[in-house]
Length: 201
Image 1 (tube, rainbow, N blue to C red):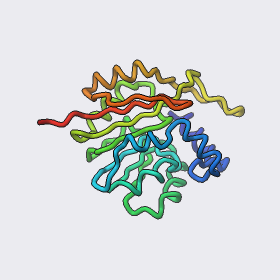
Image 2 (spheres, rainbow, N blue to C red):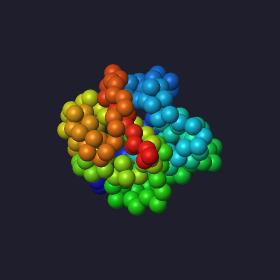
Image 3 (cartoon, rainbow, N blue to C red):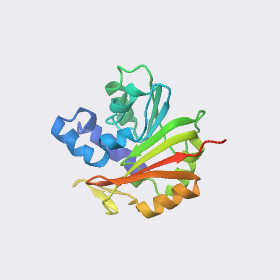
């Protein structure tokens, strides 16, 4: 985890902030999580939303205005500081610097989503089990996983170990967590999985 934190801290030092990218770069990032990804969350002003791996707020800027409350969690303190600047004009946003798997959440959520973060999580079954436990009945989980199966991110000056995501395995973990897969589609660079926690009758 230390190398991941250092990597994202360095990105901020290098002024790498996707939330502030010009439109061509934002359009490029949409190849992992564009409009259909956002629409899959079924957001409305009654919902409490959690983003795992909020980064500098690239996606939070698109989701926070359309929900009641928004919580973002990320392991990099410098990234969280930048996200707090980028999201400062929203009064429904709270940000936490911590490891999702270790943090003890006190509330449940109507929507949980994550994009380009699961590659940093080794125990994906455990992560999905925790997500299922945090969802309210009827809650939605939207996940974007990179199609790239490389075992590392090579930044030239540094290489970061990652854990590539297998969509078949992720679907199995979703089912094991008693979540229902309600949609599955692809973008140019990602597999998007949308699941739902069944409502209790």
